[in-house]
Length: 181
Image (cartoon, rainbow, N blue to C red; front, side, top):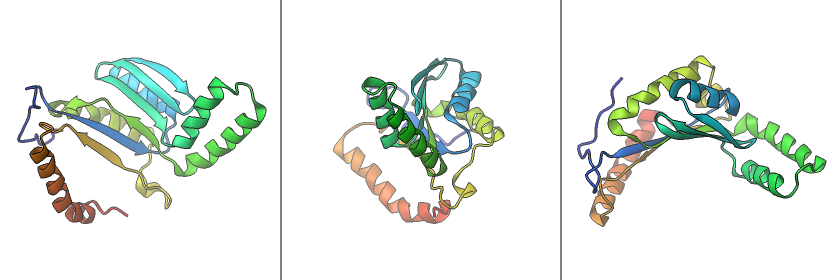
């Protein structure tokens, strides 16, 4: 699979522009998603807390897999620091986690890649699909997304305004074509 390349292929430093992707899904837990990534791209899993993992030193750079809920991540970090072993906190965390997993997506934050290398991520999409990852249409309460974080060719005001205008002009068309509910 190949992706259409941007007209301006290099950034202000003359380096290839990059794109970062964030993919939200359900049906595959954090541990399994981390295993899938390491099976495809190598690296090692570093568990930040029960809601976040870093997959470091892959052939593409570092990935993150997390339950996309700020409250849960704050609770996990706080409990590791100051309330280790608290039965009440762990019980509350567990209940909140079970509830959250029914409506909060897991997210893979991928390393920024040169646009010509984006096709390398197709294997990850295929592996998630084979492992029964689910998207927005799998449940009435799901509203997942894929965030595409482009690198601007430069940070000049005129360039940034052109990109913003282009997005605002295309936005109604995108809403219609992507059938976002």
